[in-house]
Amino acid sequence: MQLSKNVLLASVGVLPLAFSTSCQQQEEQTRPNIVLFLVDDMGWQDTSVPFYNDTTALNRRFSTPNMERLSQMGVKFTEAYACAISSPTRCSLLSGMNASRHRVTNWTLEYDTQTDAKSDVLELPDWNYNGIQPDTVTLPHNTKNATPITSLPRVLHDNGYYTIHCGKAHFGARTTPGENPLTMGFDVNIAGGANGAPGSYLGTENFGERDPRFAVHGLEKYHGQDIFLTEALTIEAIEAMKKPIAAGQPFFLYMAHYAVHSPYIDDARFVDKYRGRYDEQLKDTLNGREACYAALVEGMDKSLGDLLDFLQGQPEVAKNTIIIFMSDNGGQALAWSRQGVGNRDQNAPARAGKGSAFMGGVREPMMVYWPGVAEGGGAIDHRVMIEDFYPTILDMAGVSQYETVQTVDGVSFAPVLRGDSIAEHSIVWHFPNLWGESQNTEEGYGAYSAIMSGDYHLIYTWETGRMRLYDVKNDIGEQNDIAASNPEVVASLARELSEYLRQRDAQRPVLKSTGKVCPWPDEVL
Image (cartoon, rainbow, N blue to C red):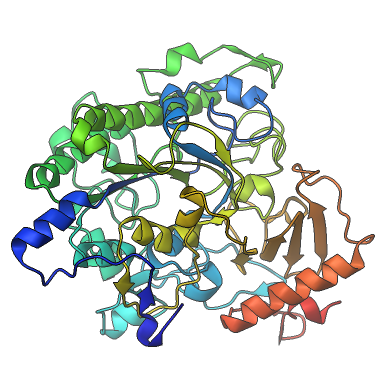
C-alpha cells in the first residue's frame, strides 16, 4: 500500500534506529546481510547452470562450478528479466522505477550527451541521459535531464546497514553527483564511476587508464601488477566486508562486476582451457574471442566462489547472509561480438541479445540463497523484473517504513521466496532510443516498447507502428509471429501497454516526415 509521501509499510516491523544502542545492536545482529552479485552483459545461458527446460549446448560450453554451488544452496528463477541495456537496468535497480518512469532509457556516460545512434526517420525524445541523482541535488547542472531518487542503498544505510559498492556503477553521467556511489548512500565505493566498461581488465595496463572515458579508478595499488580486474575487485570486496562483520553490523554488498562486458581480454588463469576447444553448438573450435569470453565467465564464477568461501568460513555470518545473483541485460549477440550465427547462437534457444526486445536481450540468470527461507535447490517460475529488486531487498532486510521521492513500480517477490503464492504482474520494457551497435528492427533492435503478460510477448516498433506477438511459453526463440491470428490478444496487450506508458508519462519519438509524435500502440490498431 502506498501512502502519502510514498511511505511504504510492510507487515513485519523493526525497531526504529532511535532506540537505545543495546537494543539497536541486538536488532542489527539479527537482520540479514545481503550480497547482490550483479554481472554485466551475461546471457541467461552463459553458465553450466541450466535456466531452461533442459541443459543446452551453451550450458556445456561454460564452466561455472560456483554458480552450480549457489543453485544447490538456494533456488534459481527461470523467468527473471531486466532492461536490454545497462544503465536503464541499474537505474531501475537503485530506484524501483520502471524505465518508462525514470527515463534513463539508454546508456549514460558524458554530461549532457545523448548516446543514441542517428536516424533519418525518428527524432528521439529528450530522455534523461544524465542519469539518476540523489534526491538532495538542487543545482541546475545536476537536475537537468536527470531523475532524483531515494536510492536503495540510502534507505538501507538510513536503517542501520553498512553499504558497500564494488565494481561498475554506470547510473549517472560524468560530473554529476550520481556518477559517484558515495552520493547514493553507499558507505564505501570501490572502483565505481560513470564508465560503463573497463578500459582494460589487466593490472599491467593499469585497468585502462590511458583512455579516460573508461579508466577504472580506485584500484591504483594494483597498477602494474599481474592481476585481473575481476580478482582485484573480489579481494577488495572481501576486505570491505570485514569491517561491518567485526562491528556486528548488517551489511549490503553490491558486487557489480565489470565482467563479462567487453573488451574480451585474455584472463590467463582460464583462457587456455577454452582456446581451440571443439564446441558442439558451433560444430567448430572456439576462436580466440569466444575463448576469452568463456574465460571472463569463469573468472566471474571464481569471484562468486571466493565470496562464498569467505562467508562460509564464518558460519555465524554465513547463516545470516542472503545472496542474490543476477545479470543486467542479455548477452551480446551481434556477429562481430561473439562466435556463431548472429542473433541466433549466442543466447540460444532465445533470439537476439543485448539491446533487443527479444528474449535474448532481456532474460537473465538469477538465483537467490536465503538461509532458512529459500534453500536446498529447486526452481521458481514466478516472473521477476529488475525494479522488483528494490522493494524485495528492503522486505528481506526488514525495513518496513521508508519514504521515497519517486513512485516505486516494483513489487516484492520476497513472499514467493517464503513459499507464498502471489499474483504475477505484467512486465513492460520501454526503449524509445537507438542503440549505437545495431538498429535492426527485424531482430528487435531500434526504438521499441514491449509487454509480457501470461504466455504472450508483444513488441511494438515505434518507427513503423508494427506489432509482433509471440507465445514465449511454446516459442522461446520467438520465430513465429502470431499477431495476425490473434487480433484480440494484440488489442488487449496494446491497450495495457499504452495505458502503462501513459500513466508514467513515458516519452515517445517523433516521426521526422510528419513532425508528429509516434502513436501509442493502441492508436494503430
